[in-house]
Length: 117
Image 1 (cartoon, one colour):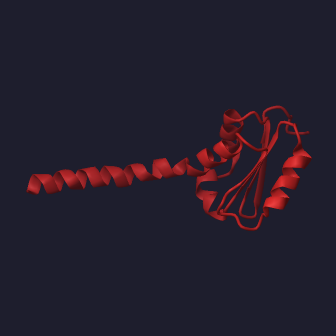
Image 2 (cartoon, rainbow, N blue to C red; image 1 turned 180 degrees about the horizontal axis):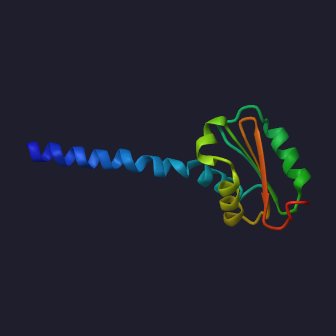
Image 3 (cartoon, helix red, strand yellow; image 1 turned 45 degrees about the vertical axis):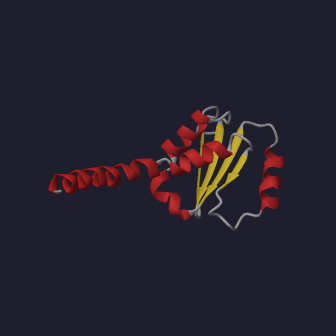
């Protein structure tokens, strides 16, 4: 019985230790999937952006290679300074320029614009 308890403890510890890695890509995966169908992705956890505002922004962007992602402040730990997160989003989508809002922080990056543009 002790071996079973020890095995369970090791398995549970492995699950707990592996959970942050799985969670760490939660918002990235969510945003990447959302950008497959629209130029603008607003997390379901963000309630301050209406569907009308989201549709209006998507219409304004049109067919350009710009993507917009709006995430809750809770995504801050995953997004960090935003640069790697933005590079990953650009790599996973057809968008070459990405604007990301996390809580009240605004970040942008591009694979087609120079930093001075």
